[in-house]
Length: 408
View 1 (cartoon, rainbow, N blue to C red):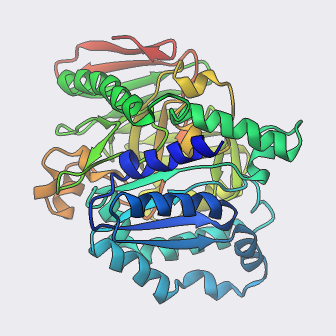
View 2: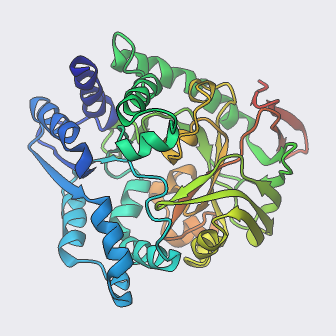
View 3: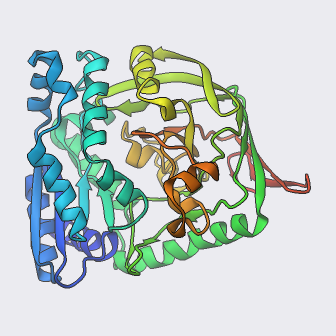
């Protein structure tokens, strides 16, 4: 186990954020993950990091605050915390975030409180958030098991057994179970590049999604859209992996170009609340109707965050036969579930999905079709019978997905 953890920490530092000599690393970690956070820090120092800063999170204390604090505190964000993110971002730091939340910890919390807190924090560190989405700094989101999360996934097992099973699944998903995970990721990036090259060369104008769940959605793509996946690159030329694991290739939809209905294929864990069996209906890009069998109020508050939260910001393709999907595990964690399924994202789009984005103003990006919002929430739509048809500028149809997998 120690050997596997060391390999995982090295993978995060060397391939995830690709730490550079003299660079600062900022780690955001739940307190339950302290041992592994320290291991990442030690590895980063050995690989040349100038300093490692850890921002600890306590989910249980956060829940107490949500339940008992006065309403007005959720419209505030501590200045010291804002300064932590912005100062290190401006210094060119790399950022690692450990995602390991209890999927239903906040189910007794009024959703409005969570949305207000999320909105205030997103507004306060907007420069940092937008900078990472524009890939100005390297960043990487990873995960390790916690007992509460593992028990949700494997309810019939003891806490120790559930954690062990989740470790095994995570090691497989991030390729730590291979002899050389760094080399395995280089090979994986090459595989994703083949799909990216095909989609970029096809220069599609529309994607039509259809399956037996009831999804019937036509998504228009901006004329100057770009597909990405696998590794990303900062302006200084540093390659990094934003999500570990990752199996997706993605681009952005035209903000006003989405029409039809899409039905979720997995639950969405939104800040400790599950939204299940939900559907969204679009007209000219905007969500005009929605339903949910569970978590309707949370979905409603999510969609009311701001003007952009009623539009889409991402279209991502993941084969049904991806390695994570083949595990047949519902992780209740978007980092994993989105890499087992095609998905869309409500809210902000990645500027890098617009050609020559680095030379464009924010207004020009919006004019090109990019949606802007304080949120970016992925939700899963992929199924074994999902068909995706691409349509180019001349009206020619190209099979992109057939029965859940790539058709090219």
